[in-house]
Length: 236
Image (cartoon, rainbow, N blue to C red; front, side, top):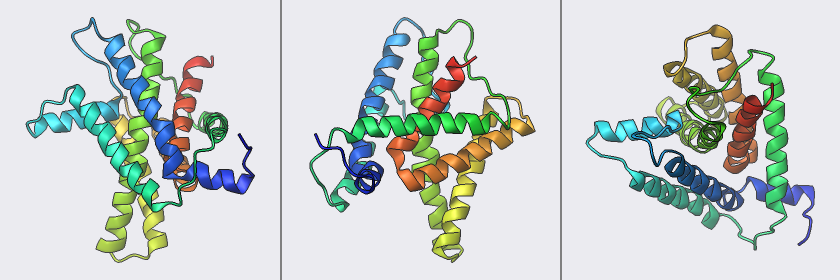
């Protein structure tokens, strides 16, 4: 097990190759956690982005059960796997994974420090739910919100601005990032009362997470989001 130099680490940790292996355990833990926590309940409490995808499927006639999670994993594998095939693949260096987790933890703390200056935000669910439910929701946020609002939405908006409006690639990328951040902030309005400082905090958080995604990849961004949420949950 060789410790990579910083240039090698930055390149490998940003790749689809390492993000794929870092994210899949997160998906399994979230899904198994949801099944276990609500096995005796008539409902399941899922991350809002996850619930939104399931609601959309229901509106078009589908009945998303656990097979939806299987489909999501398959799409994730195909998407990330296509990136793996496009890259110069080397044998996995296992030391990269703990380094990625440490980096994600530091980004999550930095995000917490910056955003709490804009608005004091408390994450929580109803009192009838345990801290395990809240932790599970934090995992789902990192997985689903980063996939939807960063991986998919930034790419989609950038494509629309570049191909549809004929903007140059650089401007399209920045407007795609900002547009995704605005939609990310607006998405949370379905679950909370509108307050300007909180909306601005969500928007700034979306911008920062978008930049982190473009610079450091999906895996680190998803885990940074998780560590940010966990910090809010457990710090007084």
